[in-house]
Image (cartoon, rainbow, N blue to C red):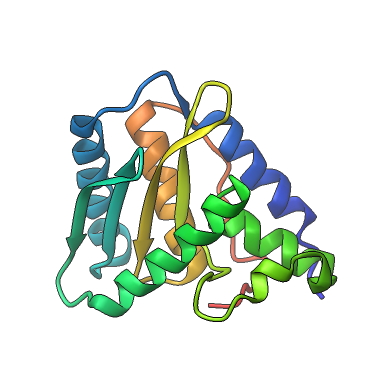
Length: 171
């Protein structure tokens, strides 16, 4: 079993740094366009992108050959994030690290939750989620880091990078 503690701390730090006093529908569009630009520049392939604010989808785009399968993954990632208040990659890491799946019976929900990176809460300054940013179409660590890096670029903040290739995560 891999030692995920370093990555858990990095993702917790990302969640602490990436907080907003406000975040509008116009901000959602700006963020989504950053995600779309970054995905093509860095990975050269399309992803699905969705941004929700107060449970309203304010941006949704299936880029290129992205499909409704990607939409299905985004919904499942979102369900886990809403359950915990943490990003989907944090959920994956903490559950994998625990080796005690019985502590997380909700994580076994068939069809409802995906323990995969790619959904990140939009937090207020106190750390309460009021929106969500989702991607699907890359590996889970790439989906996660794409969203986190895009939020960092949007806000002008520096964050740690979990996509360092030292641990191979489940795709």
